[in-house]
Length: 350
Ligand code: TRP
Image 1 (tube, rainbow, N blue to C red):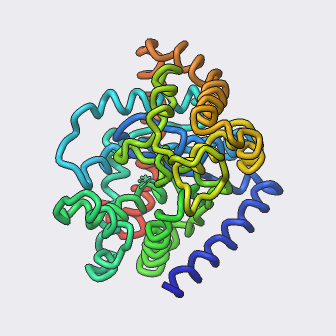
Image 2: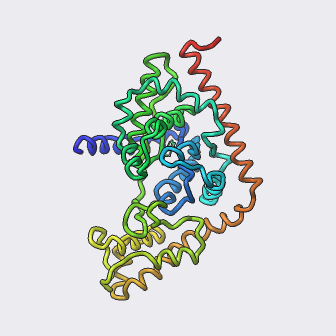
Image 3: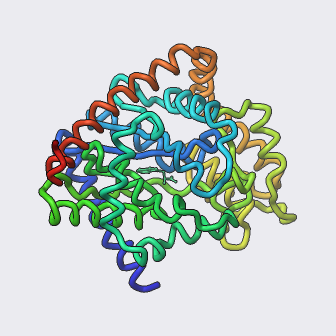
């Protein structure tokens, strides 16, 4: 445990340094990050990473977003609704301010040359390294799924995601750090074994406060505690109304002992830019009903412009398709070039 948190602190330090340098030299950086299209984006994604991506994009950094469709089948046996999930992910991105003119949005399954990097990369990792990955273990346990070949090796596939476009920064949450470490190792080993082709990327950890779900646990669709960007105002009100609180009428911010109440306060704080403690004090003895009314109002006003933009584009299938086709076309050109560099380094040009 101690060594794990040491690694975390070191990673955080590297991440902070990188953040400072981005301000000075945005032109030196290329970002790649991604999401699994397993459902709608929710407020946890928004505050955890989407806001940051939009800001980085708007600083003029070369930004690339992967809709990781092959990762959907790492810990589930179906691709049900995948096309709809992909489409809605694009809609959510655009509604949040991702600009397809600046940011490449693409999917795994449309970029064969990127997937082909998996073969040489797999030869660079050992079975023991794969079995040791704590995030893979946690995902296997949470899903109750058997450890399939893909679940075991997807961190290597994630290295293909990052290295195919020579990205050097990867904005992620801390659960993804083992994958970034694996990616760095693959880049290093490839360069040592063949020729220098890849830079070692750095994880960019989010600055944001983690937004808890409505029950105080991590916000996740699978826990049923999330507010999706695509929810209507009425749906949002209902979700907040159902949130589990406690019987103490006096509202206080105490995440340890009052996870439900505190999660609601944190949500309102993020949406209003106020402090959770101040909101708690203002509501005081008015109880959970008043708290929930305040949270509903804060969330709905905050999300209103995003939802409005979402509404404007959600039926524009042509535009959404065009964005993905353009992104996939660009990604294919980049992946072909990288694969060619890899073939040359390996002497496989015939
Ligand atoms: N594994 C990431 C997640 O579950 C998604 C992802 C896929 C990703 N490929 C990536 C993130 C490449 C960063 C870089 O959230």
